[in-house]
Image (cartoon, rainbow, N blue to C red; front, top):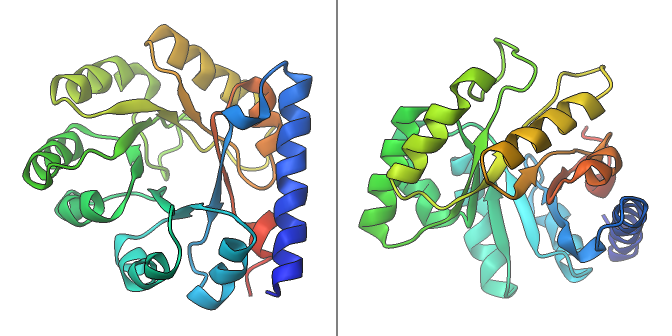
Amino acid sequence: MPIDDASTRLAEVREKIARAARIAGRAPDAIELIAVSKTHDAVAIRPLLAAGQRVFGENRVQEAAAKWPELRETTSGVALHLIGQLQSNKAEEAVALFDAIHAVDRPSLVGALARAMDRADRRPACFVQVNIGDEPQKGGCLVADLPALLAEARSAELPVAGLMCIPPADIEPAPYFALLARLARDHGVTGLSMGMSGDYETAVTIGATHVRVGTALFGERA
């Protein structure tokens, strides 16, 4: 992707975020844009780095470990977010590599992350993923299990930054975003990781603090 294309796409997404924020009476700079670079190689990522984007999201520990150390050597200020499911046996690698982890969804992972953070003396921000549509094929804790999981995460001294969700596909997402926002308020957390390429503007109007945008920045995958 040429640098001009990357700059144009990045500017368009940022402007849409800013417009949605203004509609909701929010400050545009209160929303973190995470460029979802999963499946994209370094050649595709560099134009966005050159255009000024510094926060990126990856789904897999192994994929991120293969491409980001070299990219970080040549670009300062990069923050890396793990937005995919995390196996407990990968907790140590994830803590070493990522600045935020968006899919804390079960007690066993809480324990693995807490131990890894203590060993590494490094504490990436953690978002508890909620299975907001109660979909068996998706990760995330059930809404009914959220209080217990949050209590466990706090007891383990994980730095809980907020909640994360992926609403059901092909259904109006606004009610699901509103439910996540209410759950966050009820449980005293401020971060809301919600909204992707097709619905991030809606998410921003409902309170998203982090939006995860891939296709709108990188184009359709082959």
